[in-house]
Image 1 (tube, rainbow, N blue to C red):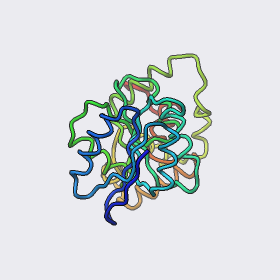
Image 2: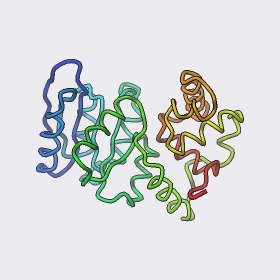
Image 3: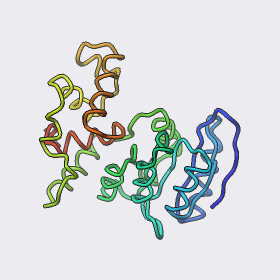
Length: 230
C-alpha cells in the first residue's frame, strides 16, 4: 500500500488492483491529467478502504477481484461509512458481462468500466463520478440487469413496493434516469428547469434510500418500472 500527498484542488484518486503493473500503468495515466493526482495505491480491498480514509480520496478506482477483501466488499465498506460519504467508487472489470458488476453497483459503486477501455475514457470516467454522476451505459447495464433478474434470487428489496413512496412525476424522472439521461436532458424531456429536475432526482434518492444515480438505475429495473429492451 502506498500513499502520496498531491497538490490541492485536484481529483484525489486511489487505485486498487492486486497487479502491480496494472496499478503502475493506471497511475502514470492518472498523473498525466492536470486535474488529477494519485494519492494511494492498494493491492487489496482492505487496503483500498484504509486509503480512502487516510488519503482523503475523492474517487477509488476498484478492481473487482482481489485477494482477501474483494472489490465488492471494499465498495460496500466505503458506501457504509459516514466518514466516506463523499468518496465515489469506479469499478473496473475484465468483462462488461461480469455479473459481479451488478453486485458492486448494489454495494454502492457509481459506475463501471472494462479494463481495456481507452485511456481518455478512463480519465473522463473518473471526472464523471467525482462530479457525483453515475457512469452507466444504458444498453450494457440493462442487459446485465436483465440477465441477473432472470435468475431465481432476491433483489435486495427493490420490488414494486419500493416505488410506492414516489409521485407519478418522480416515477417519470426515475424512468429517464434509468434510460441514461442527465438532469439537463430530463428537464428538456419533461419541460422542467434543470434545477427542478435535479430536485426531483434528489428527492427520489431520499425516498428510496439509495446513495447515487447508479443505484437509482438498478431500482428502476429491479422494481419493474423499466423493462430491459422495452
